[in-house]
Image 1 (cartoon, one colour):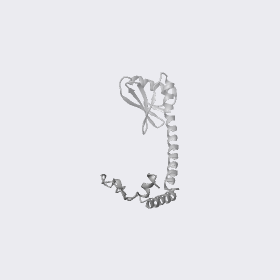
Image 2: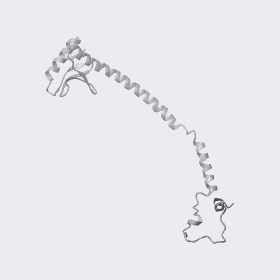
Image 3: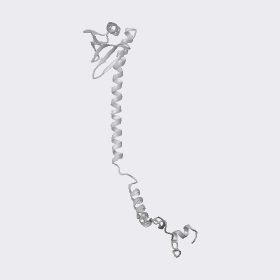
Image 4: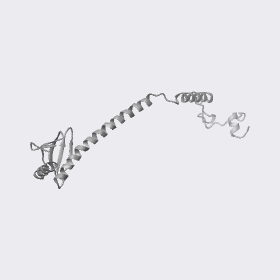
Length: 170
C-alpha cells in the first residue's frame, strides 16, 4: 500500500500512525519533507503556518490531504484524495470528449449557409429600388432653406403641389 521511511506498510492503521508521527514532528517548522510514496505518488508532510501540518501527495501536481486526530482518519483522508484524483481525471476526460463534440457541432453550424441570406439580399434590392424612386440619395433643399431666408416668395409664385397639400389648398 504505502512506503514510509523506506518500509513497505500494508496495514492502514500503522501507515496512519506513521503519518501522524511525522506530522507531529514537523509542526511549527513551516517546512516540507518527503517521507515515502503511496500509489505511485510521492508522500510528503508539510507544515502550514495557519492550518498546521498537511499530508501532500505529489505527482504532476500537488494534492493535500488532512491530518486528523486519529491514524485511521488521516489515512482515510489520504486515500480519499487519491481516489478523488481518479474521479477528477474521469470527469475531465468526459468533459474533453463532450467539448470536442460541441466544437464539431458548432463548426458545422458556422460553416452552414445562412438560411435567410437570399431573403435579406432580396429585401436590400427592394430597399434600393424604393430609395431610387424617392430620390432619397439626392440632396434637395426646400425653397425656404436655400440660404436666402430674407426673400419672400413673389406674389405670382404658385405653391408646389406638396406645399399646396400641406397648406390645405388642394
